Length: 100
Length: 127
Image (cartoon, rainbow over all chains, first blue to last red; front, side, top):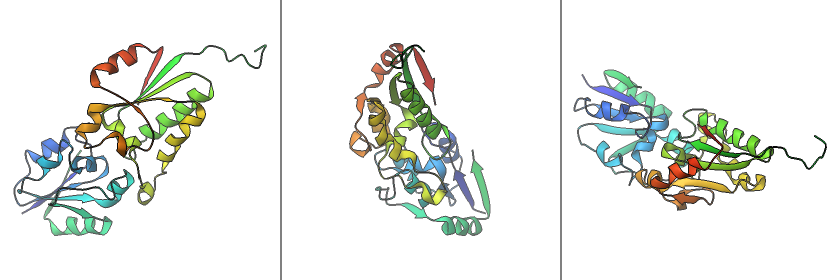
């Protein structure tokens, strides 16, 4: 069983991203939506922590674009998904857990 | 009011913005409140710290979320004589940003000067 972990709060404001990263099982995935997309910006304090190699990391493109990061450089292993990709991830993983 | 030029009491207002835009309504509500303060000819300062610095990021495209792109309104602050706009250096650098990523000119302040800025006000409003 593999879990899709969804985080929606900025790591600079709430600790849900750290709480998720410290517990998420290897082989799962982390999807960043809403204000949590702030975590992926290259050069920011959290971008490197996300790239552990233990989980796949996805970020929701419309939430990036809304905040002015449509063309921003992201770490190589972080994948952008659109709303259809979000649905694909939910169906692809056995479990979905939201950290909010 | 016996004189149409009488603008009454003028206080120093500081609006403190600490949240990212679009994930909540705080940023838009703050901006509207800043404009109200300016419309009443108050002495307005606006500060962006923590995730608040994201409010000033260039190239915001919130259309796909069904949200209004109010970031363009920050460019109108100058017309309302709101010219004291401060951003905390450390909040930018922690987030991989610099003043070049922002859509308006700001005065950047180090973290250890923020307290003094607050102490210089009559009213501090938090968003």
